Image (cartoon, rainbow, N blue to C red; front, side):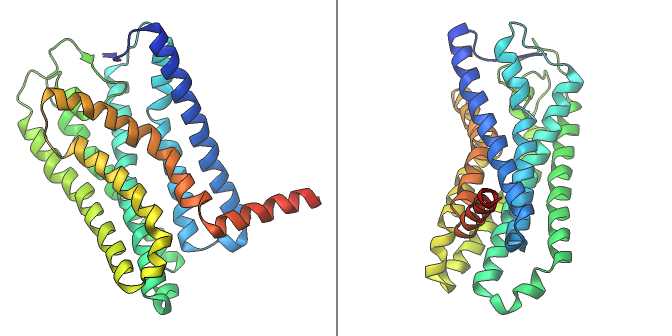
Length: 290
């Protein structure tokens, strides 16, 4: 199979530098969040437990597509094996779906902390947190398995040119010589349950926060912005149908949720957080004293 859209060498070089910079910042930012949360005992709370796991998830998520995309930008032959293509798709979809559920869990955690503070220690004890994390990964990869298997069963008899920078469901459907409407229905039903369901539950959590504690909602406003950007681009790409011209725009949207969002998340959830900023300053002060 052949991958890629851009053939102009100058454009490829510009894209390589841009994507490499974003990828490097994403990895560095998320690793820093994990390190600070691990080091500072004051951050050993459910909220930061989920944040550390979100950062770990973002590293895996963007790494499932970006390194191969960067390699293809430097090579004339942009190929990927059949097995490699579906392996990439499986992990990208699985990690993306897991992030959808995990963002919902994080919104629920904020709802309990802000609106039900007296029950927080009981509702979000370590055992519950681990179970919610396992549930996120389980739902995410079960969703991915369904889509990957359904897509792999299609006969691919066209030119095998994937007009995208990574293997994605809509792009692979275009290579099939069989009607893909059943696959599209599976995508809408199964994917919709996970993506749209997670989005609705997340919005409900923030609505209850707004109704219960309007002042506290300001601290979650930035979180809500990330949620809307991420879920919005994913829903537009996978759930809503579109024409061929609109599908071209979907490829741009996939760059947002696959490459850019993993960079935004550590900034919004971590570095804009007062407790996290204090923990970084404390860590820097300790190093200076030493």
